[in-house]
Image (tube, rainbow, N blue to C red; front, side):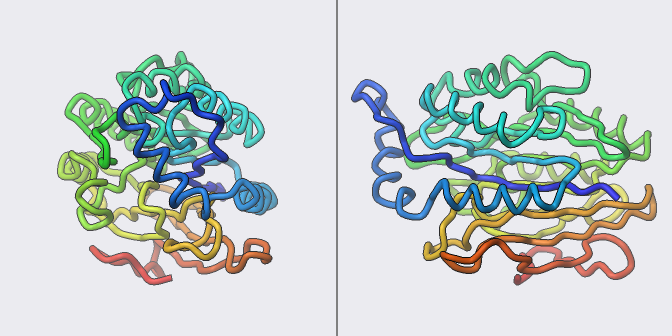
Amino acid sequence: MFRLAHLSDVHLGPLPDVAYRDLVSKRITGYVNWHRNRRQFLHDSVIDAIIGDMKAAAPDHVAVTGDLVNLALDIEIDMARQWLELLGNPHDVSVVPGNHDAYVPGAFDKVCRAWGNWMTSDGGSPPRDREAFPYLRIRENIALIGVTSARATAPFMATGYFREGQRRRLAKLLDETGAKNLFRVVMIHHPPIRSAVGAHKRLFGIGRFQKTVLRHGAELVLHGHSHMPSLYTIDGKDGRVPVVGVSAAGQAPGGSRPAAQWNQLDISGEKGNWTLRLARRGLTGASMPPVELSSMDLLGETAVMPVVEPLPL
């Protein structure tokens, strides 16, 4: 059995002191949004509780599906690198960037330089830019494939992009790992589901992504961005593929979105007979430690999954 931990949307805070020159263009709207909304409900103490509970479960690997920072300031990117060092060895932790990590032009390449060891294919060099995605890591009989949807956007927009070049590279990796009978986990920040988020936060290229999975196969898709513990399915080459979201790792109780959670995914079996069990663990109150909130089988004879709408918790 392989235990995979999934967390997302850490939004490490608090924001450092910001110079006026740093608040050019989109950063001013993000700065205002942080002080009006996010600062109240995103807390490092919550993240610490989630990470402590996750480490106690002794996962074999950790997948982080983006938004480690808020405004992609240089000091935030470096702070996130230090946090990743505490989270785990790059061999045991895989990261894909989110829209906040690519908040302004140039930020994405800085993230690649700072966090590259956690986004590197086995035997490869750290990424220099988005052309290095997707990357591939194989751990036991699990293929971890990191796709990027992160790109700088206009103010008040948080859209993502999955374009043709990355589609071709992803298709190749899915074919190669499928031929090896591996359990293929695709990690992406934006949910590849049309109804998952509002239009200003959507992924451009949803149809392209879904057709790639349909033609080339996958066993699991993990995403962030929505701050919701959602479960959808899409058509795959060998049947329905679960698409799993998770609450923001730094979300304190009392906000409009569910409090912080992480997903524990236990994978066992072999091609044609995989089993996948999802347990959601997280906060239920301000003073309570994380607990198991729900659990379900996503693959196998006992699995019951939705086709379009998310499962209720």
